[in-house]
Amino acid sequence: MSLPKTLAEDVARNLVMVARLIDEEPEEAYAYSRIALRLASRVAAVREAAGFAAYATQKYAEALAEFRASRRMTGSVELWPVMADCERGLGRPERAMAMAGEPEVQKLDKAGQVEMRLVAAGARRDMGQIDAAIVTLQGPELASSSVHSWTPRLRYAYADALLEAGREDEAREWFGKALEADKDGSTDASDRLAALDGVEFVDVLGDDDEQPAEAPTAEAAEDAAEVDALEDDEDDVDLDDEDDDEDGTSKA
Image (cartoon, rainbow, N blue to C red; front, side):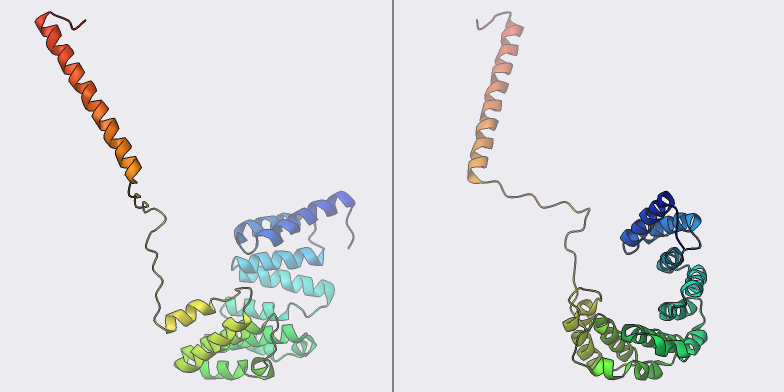
């Protein structure tokens, strides 16, 4: 759907703000998405952006409605995994599992299929089926030595599931593999490894703690001593003046 130029520019500005803020300030991103939605609710890209902004603020019912609207407009299955994850967010892991078995999954690209596997494994864990979650994550993508955008998250999810199952040694190995693939720091695999190894990071000085004063240099100490001496001399002069005044005499 095409929009008048001025309206299109207004919508675009709001969508840019959504993209800019969604990771660090999701509530603000959500506010911008609502403005764009009021301006152009019949534009699929607007509905999708509104969906992701709602998703980022854990408004899963709203996010799911927006994703469904976008899908109706475009006919694309690209949003299928995140729609399934919304079902998880709404406390309906069974529905997420059902979606993982739908024909739409076969139409996803490799990244989308991996994402769907992650969602399905999460749904298994929601239902207390940790061993099934581990099996769900296994496959050629996990075993591959090639690194893709989704590799760190897949390995991390596998390590996390192993740890929940009490398989600590294997979990440590896969957190290490996740860290190797995670060049952008998209996971906290390094922190998880440190925790497994018993390493604890302590913030010695908090934000509100005062910094310790530096020891004065020898030169600064000498300067301070000279100042103290001058002040002592001035004090002596003042006392002498007071004595003279009391005697009715003056030094001048």
